[in-house]
Amino acid sequence: MALRKVIADSSSIILLQKVDLFDVFCDQYNLVITEDVFAELTSNGKKGSAYLRKVLRDWVRQPLPESIDHSMGQGEASSIALFLEGGGDFVLLDDKKGANYCRNKSIPFINSLLVSRLLYISGAIDAAAYDRTTMQLTKQGYYSEKIINRAENINKNELSRFLPQPL
Picture 1 (tube, rainbow, N blue to C red):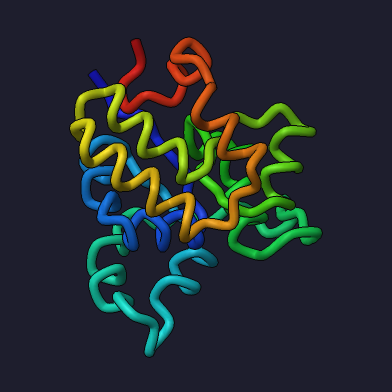
Picture 2 (picture 1 turned 30 degrees about the vertical axis):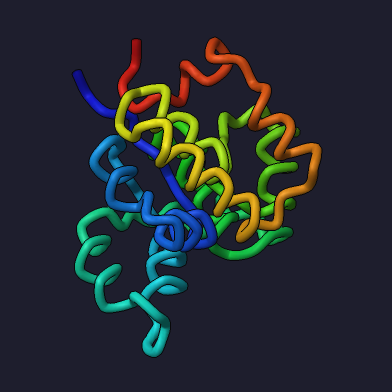
């Protein structure tokens, strides 16, 4: 069965790297990023840029320039634009403006905090890894109590559309 295609922004990829979920995530999903996100992640001097340049280079796509909403960061805007052009099944982002835009336009999206839970539900990580990465993400991400509570309490039914493989 085909893996879900996820369009991710740079902040989400960075967070997943920091908590050692990036490689597991890439094994479970077809990751797609835009040229803008690739540039943000691989600029010279950034920690891990050489590794990301090597790993991500084949997953780069670019939306049409006129479809980008410039009210948010370039990476988030281009990721959402690529989704709207049919480039993926959902968006992974950790940006408040981007999340609000997705919510207002009924665009399916998750944040990195939910990735840990999805990987646990799907069996890609065990309970100890789930607990560790969830704790790390709540400390390293800029999540409000409301977002943390929502991630803890969202039911599996609502998450099913984001699991690595469609049911």
